[in-house]
Length: 441
Image 1 (spheres, rainbow, N blue to C red):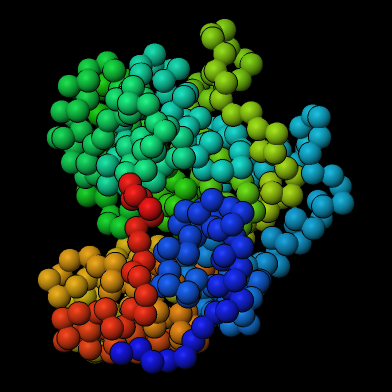
Image 2: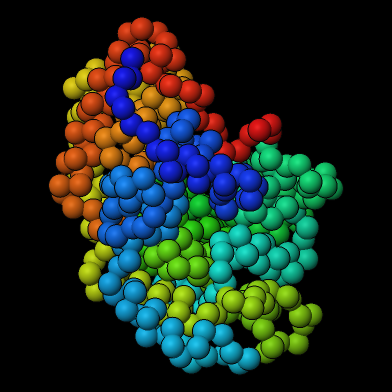
């Protein structure tokens, strides 16, 4: 049974204040305290590099920083310097800033498979703009989303497909259909069933498994043959897979793609990019109906675009993607060895590309378990590791990873005890963590 003394009194009080004022106690559901063991959801004071400090004074090695957005580490000097240069020059004007064209040039030089780009503040706006553009270009109503990828947008066309669909009209839900990742035959059957109705196929080009050989090229061919738009959601794969995104790594060019997360290293910036003829439908240099593409008051804030340019330059000049992969490989190997050494190698499973690792916590029957996840997270937190995933940042040191592996080994020892007992409950010290998407609170 877990008898280690570890409490977060200030964080607990702050969480109560948050719940009194902010629905859900956080501004992102994935950051909610329901995602952490009871009374062990730290509230952050500050971060630097690969570490964060909570308001109780505890320091953690942090993974999945900013839901994968802070890939260079917190307060990265090059990014902060670029932002600071813009702060006393004004952030928002009645006409475009010169920074907007410079950021567009830098982005398109880094992601050369795209011909035009438009910036926004969050990923959902970009993906929804891509869907709207596809519908406008094709005149078709339906959106086909990959069923195996967890999140595309907060907007109705996607949220209506999740267990949290309250508030979404059924008529809207009927316009979104799904296809399985890696199955070209099933996708072709879907496109044939809804012949001339599907405006676009939208998917993450890769996830926790690599694309089957020929799959993305096959999707490209299917989209062309059925006259629909191929959209890659590169919010996660962008920069973590390669500086030019997954499309650059795998050599398959989508019609449209969306980027965010790592693009600003924590600063709010996203991007819609793609073919000139499609993107221009949202512009002024064509003779057709105008498309209200992206029009945001804060989408081109100068300091966020300066952050994006600094991120792009750092990735290219310092080989950040390669470093992320090297760090991830070291971490994955260490965790797997620790789990195997404690006899739980079949129960704590590390998955995904090295730059984007997640872990599964499986019970005695090999099934995913929120109770065992709770046990595992408790031991990580008490050991100074904040890890809702094992997604690395380039600021991690070998010593950080070695420390993480040591803590994982201690967690695995407790995990083994719970498996032997056939019941993890004595080690939970409260309710289990919960999935983000669920119908009831």
